[in-house]
Length: 253
Ligand code: 13P
Image (spheres, rainbow, N blue to C red):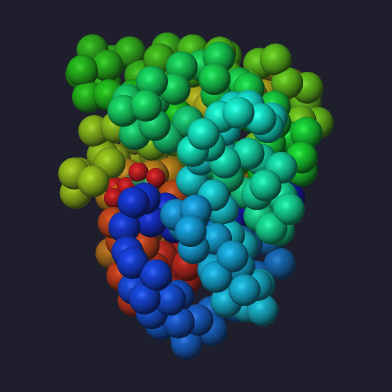
């Protein structure tokens, strides 16, 4: 059965002190994830070990927000998947729209990162989603299908089962403008149908598809209530303990 996931994406926010305080505030509430639920904190690189030490006891996981597309070697400033694995990190966000847009991460690079994650037993949280102009033209399904094809279609069904997908419409990221539950459900069902076409229903039904884009405490229940929305990848609201706790509580069981 696929997992229901609340994933925090802190992006480039918080000092060490702020990060420790936020985690401690969330841990105080001690929300126990159910058997098919997962809570993940994607924190900046310098806080990975601190976060891992703090949250593991509660049954929560920690993710990196990015990794190198190279295995190892002379790549100043890069962080390899092997390094992440060596400090016990087993999740990594790949292909966030901010990385695609500001750091030129094209499909080929994303494919390389995904392959390295899969080789090292790190679960990729692969992001996709269209910009506003694409949606206004009604081309969002074609656009997302192409993103999936270009980054994921070289992998086998058993590899695909190890990947989490996050649908994050760019027009909803950090804008306060959330996709309606209906828009999210439609796209998630479409993504699942693309996976089913390529790898079969067994694989498609096993992949968690998260929604991202202005998720907050007040809309999480409605969004996560849709059958194909398996939780969320949360930016802004994940920096607020009570908001994120509410989001965790909104996960389906
Ligand atoms: P917001 O929740 O701030 O809209 O960000 C979404 C996001 O980009 C998560 O990866």
